[in-house]
Length: 267
Ligand code: NAP
Image 1 (tube, rainbow, N blue to C red):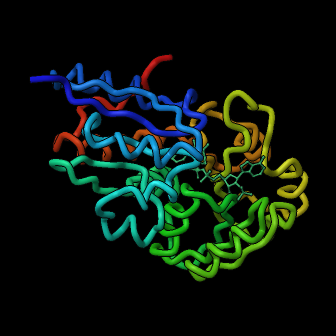
Image 2 (image 1 turned 180 degrees about the horizontal axis):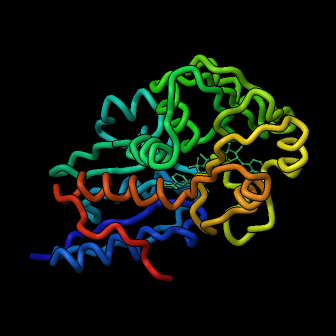
């Protein structure tokens, strides 16, 4: 039997740890499969997806394709449909089915460090695919959500869909914030000195608040935003926790087994 092939589809995608993680797990479980990286420019997504079924058994989908990829699938699982973003594709006998495991990953990561209780105030930076999963999870947990984004129209659209408030990144004020989560790509390797909130430290000190701060970026582990928050005494949640939890769920969808190892791949 030929090896089954899997990949991560994104642009950029070189930062992704998925190939090392999943190839390591296939090897460990003696599954005949290989996992690749597919850098696909936004304007080439349709062309790439037309040849997908014949080659791949499944994929992860990352920045910036999580929403756009849905129109190339045969079916989207109900939760992924509600979230409006797909980060996992399963090829079931020639039928492409989309799922969202980011939501399980994000909430599992948060819950490992924080008690999520109804009525908490959450501020979400970003309005892309990752934001959709995080907002869906927090709204289900009963949080009040404020979405702040570079392009305010995108935040407004998401706020209308999920019944949240919205604004620009510059509007951030720590006064009403129990949980702060960055879902933008700002601060991601290689631009690790960047942060979506350059005035975070001043803002936290002025408000005398110490919210729990999470970053969904997992490379680097400690982003500039998390470093700033930690310097102000906040509890921080690293994106790697979410990454590992969503990856385990993806693996289960593809091969029907829970991976035995949850360790981070070495680079
Ligand atoms: P996406 O759908 O393309 O959304 C990107 C978001 O970042 C948008 O809100 C965009 O704002 C904002 N943004 C991009 N460049 C910016 C800049 N220079 N200044 C301010 N805002 C900017 O991407 P995504 O799929 O949500 O992924 C976002 C990040 O999350 C990536 O780093 C990805 O690796 C990470 N992620 C991690 C996990 C995990 O398991 N840990 C899971 C999912 C995603 P506009 O609307 O203004 O364009």
